[in-house]
Length: 622
Image 1: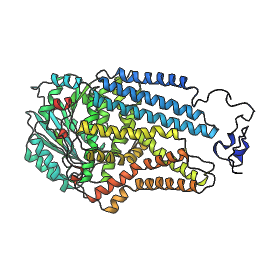
Image 2 (image 1 turned 90 degrees about the horizontal axis):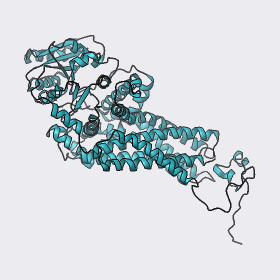
Image 3 (image 1 turned 90 degrees about the vertical axis):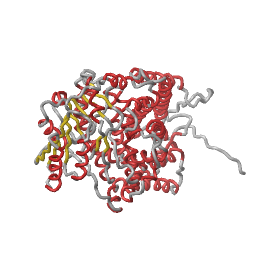
Image 4 (image 1 turned 135 degrees about the vertical axis):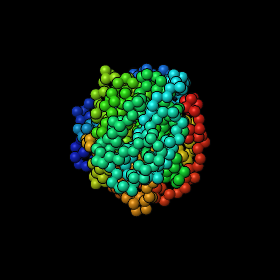
């Protein structure tokens, strides 16, 4: 007769699951299988009856986490503290809600195991999100750079101890290395020597011209060709240390492609007037960012660390020592045993050893020298692989120190080293998640009635983290680095393009320890289209797999009777698409390295922050 009517099932009927009914179809009853009512029939309907208890739990968790951040943020402005409070209280509330919502589902042994894995991953996302929020707050709302200013005031402008400049080289273009030596010869400093250590270069035509050029530059320049020499760059630097002049007090290291400013030593050495000062560091910088769009994108990606991260780390005496434009007191270098030949990031490992001994390090944010960037995407990837793999070597070797309170490091130093590597570790686990997402989606396609999309709530925090990092990058690059919007987008794309490489390096670094040192070639020839495509073949394969999974899941769901899309499926499709963005970015950057589009596509900097046109005091105030 056209009436609409509903059938209300009185009792749950679990046998329907065995008959192929999907989801909650076996549990529509108002009584459970034991004939007990599931709720009070006369009480108000409340979406979350335990919300009072959950709210208290959220507040307690947030208060504990917030207190940990506030204990070590004495110079953080009230707006920065408010920002952290909003983020942390929001994360706590969302986390409690997700766990509660999952606990209200019909759980089986399988769903409990899957839920535990998802919750573990969620905790990792939360840790990264908190670290990102803390860096954002400190980069934007710190009232003053007290430690940097204090160290600048203590520097002695009449302090000129002898400096031994070490230039390790392997198979470097002689014309490039000779330009580096010419710049060193022009240093405005009264007391220095230069040691060039060419290790294991086989071709005489490569190293002989450099030896001859050193002879022309005078007695200050000494050239060593050593073959065989073990230990990669660290082995060359240890050889140089053994051959350093007896009266040299400071060791300075630059890469073979760096052209330094005349005032490099005169500006940085005075910081060693502080007796406990072990390391003085200035940024890595580059002079070829205008050659093409690929290098301009790489340059934009590099800038964030050196003009945001290193400045905030300097306030807690926790900078990362990187192996060029760095200086270290010779006596301390010898005290800690020199450069670690077992580690492919011997520079960062040395810095951590120095901190463990209780010494100081200082970062001057002005650039005093500029080198050359990788010429191809594959070299860009190899360089970042070495950094990430070396970080895992350090993490494994110094685990007890980093997680123990009685091993020389301050709380701030431990925080910055662990929080700094956390995004890389997250990239490693994200690679595992990508593999799991593909397998899950394939299972959804082959068994659509048995395998459902993950609950929408579990996707909330990863999507929030993705959006949060994009907002942070845009805000800090525009306000603190001085980049325009196109450069900021370029930095984001270049950073995303390295996610897969970093993930591979992290996973390898957690289970192996003898990956060889990767040298970054200089002045290399550009790759063609097919080589560029091959350079990103792993990323392109994963990108296509994720796209195929998204399409396949939608297609199978639409063509399987009785299945609807639903919000969980829609969110899962969005997750798969977003998960593919780093792999698409890698393919995009690889193509950019092949086609060599003009750098003008990215526009110009609004500030000359990284080119040494402002003093270190001005940059600290900025």
